[in-house]
Image (tube, rainbow, N blue to C red):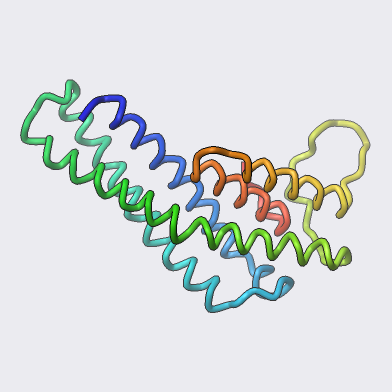
Length: 181
């Protein structure tokens, strides 16, 4: 296995882990169940799957980092099998993320955005949004909706699935008042 391949796998796993962490924060927001009419069972089920995936990918990535520390040059044959096993596990999680988690993120984000547009009086908490500038420009619900839609549309144009998902989660967080960097 080449160093570039291992490096790329680690980078992808870190982006997926960051996305899963933020998604877990967003799914914990009660507004998904109370303000927006989303299926409570689906949200709870997705949250459970996300927590398990997050634990697995963090464990695998940490062990891959441990192997890298122990076998700096990547030449010790005793670590080759373990390295291969961790990479295969990370790739499996990545595939599950792409085909099982991302479509749900996309659907939930689209539902929440659509409901927020249809009900402009929906209470949006934009106090968690960091100020963009020091001008006295007031943040309004319309501006929050526009910004969330812009972030989501930007995510739709992203090439990598993990980048797409992160932008969707970021837009969803904006609609729910959950700050995601």
